[in-house]
Image (cartoon, rainbow over the protein chains, first blue to last red):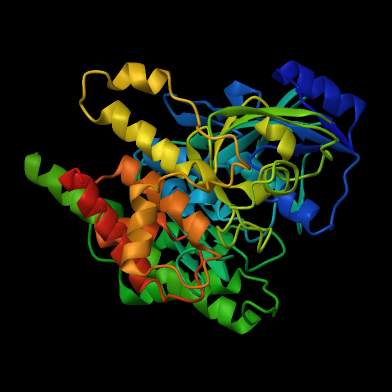
Length: 296
Length: 190
């Protein structure tokens, strides 16, 4: 095994072009587990910790450009207002020790269906900035996950940053596990209200071969909210609408039975989380709505 | 490969480090610092917790090469680290100079023998928070870091800060007592 230590992003791209099999390591919280357990013996290990810009973020007009190695602890501390869903998801990642090292770039690189960031990214809307010596491109998050632990990256590409839409409304995140800390999701659910476009987006984790959106459920809810004038009148979501939404979210799952839970449990739990996160975000939207109405 | 980094305030060099080796392995097997414990090797248990440039991390998940040029504090250096911190923040006039001149003492095997204990270590003993002792070094490093950041933690803060450290003996109650005790002593300036 060779240990590559690029001192700059350009050096890292050149190294990845020369050695496409090189495994990038940043926080190490996935890669080192595989090496420690002898599940993986990469020919080249490429340390990205020397590249300082990967740990930086910029808050823009419409989105946040989050460097691939920004650790979860920093997201929780600094980006709670702009990226509330991802901040909540970050808080459910493992433990403080892991959150000090691991980041979203690694979650995307590993592309595990159980990665905690994915449902939040899907719900908020995001693009992955991938780069190689051939050039840079933005991969929409909806096209990024291609299979179990597979993603749309080419062998010579590295993830530089993730561009995540800034929240324009309430966002929530929910995760099922046997306890709070140090738990791989049995399943997870992210939901974001987008009042600016009067749409709702979802993300489901650990209940299909890849992280997925519940598109039929989103379409149903978008239509129901529009039809009932909910965005304007700020009324409580009708229980039948919430139930239908939950059922459609559960139907969007394609889960398996495994040691963490059965497929039917996962479907059920996703439905429950969908209903709850919808209620939480909608209550929060109504609260804000009432405040602005009152002020006007 | 060769690795140069700082451990408990002293420059260290390790040779013939395998590229896939963890920082934990280097600390234990190459530098003779067995305080950080090797248990799960997957970041679940927190027994290997060390400070890497100040942040608590699982040393089993840091590739040795990633520690090049960086500063590591292990449980063996915790007493000195805490003493240095209290001198630096103690409000005494010579504190900063003293801190700048600080060096790890002793020329022994660096296992911490013969050095004074940090407040959090003493509190663990006084509160009976140590049973088999395997999780203790990781808990000490994590608890000490929290007390540095948050001198008056709530119970929820303590639980959150120690949520990455598993203990299978104590049921955590005595550990909570110990951290509360260390916090109380710290605020009294004892």
